[in-house]
Image 1 (cartoon, rainbow, N blue to C red):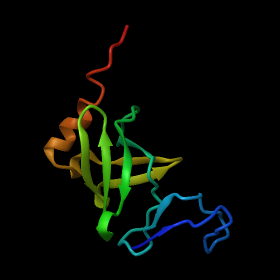
Image 2: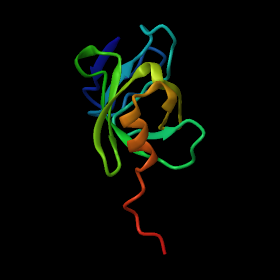
Image 3: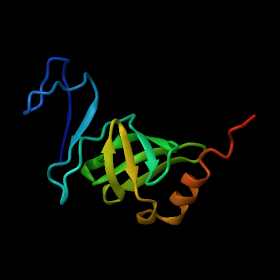
Length: 117
C-alpha cells in the first residue's frame, strides 16, 4: 500500500488524473482485491442503507489496511478495509456483518440524536 500527499495542484497520477491539493490519498493496488482510492472526508454508508452514518478521518493509518471513521453521535472507530464493499462517488460502502457488534450498533444509532419534525 502506498500513501502519498499531493504536493501541489499540478501533481498527476500515473494515469494522468490530477491529484487533489494537500489531500491524503491511498493507492490500494497492493491489496488482495483492488478498491478505488479512498480519501479523507468520504462519506460512510452501510451496505443497503441510504443514509450516511459518518465520514473517513484517516486512510491506512500507519500503513495498516484500515480506515479511521467518525460515526455520527458515537466518535471514531477503526474499520478494516476487508469490510469495504464499494467506493462510489466519494461514498464508502461497508458491510456491517464484517464489523464488530459495537460498530454495528454505532452505525444503527447514528441518527438517534436528530430531531425530526
